[in-house]
Amino acid sequence: MRTMMYENGTFDTTLAAAAGDDPVLLAELRAAFMESIERQIDLLKRARCDGNWEVAAMRLKSLAASFHATEIIELADEAITAAPGEPIILRKLDTFLDQFE
Image: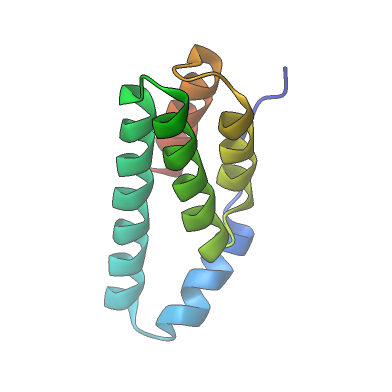
């Protein structure tokens, strides 16, 4: 099993390009991204059917792709192919959140 470590290079570059020299905007974008990621992970945790799980995983992937967050894209891909409630992927997502913060 591969351990996911948050690498922020591409993500931070994308945020910096969007925010320019505005540190307040940078902080707001980062917070908005985190809120959205947390919301999708919460939906994954509560999903009880294939459809809800897949929708939450696809939204997670889309969100991550829009910010070039490759680590979360990989985790979302794992979730897409996993069964609803898969504890291994949920632990990996929680670990990602802990490392991101």
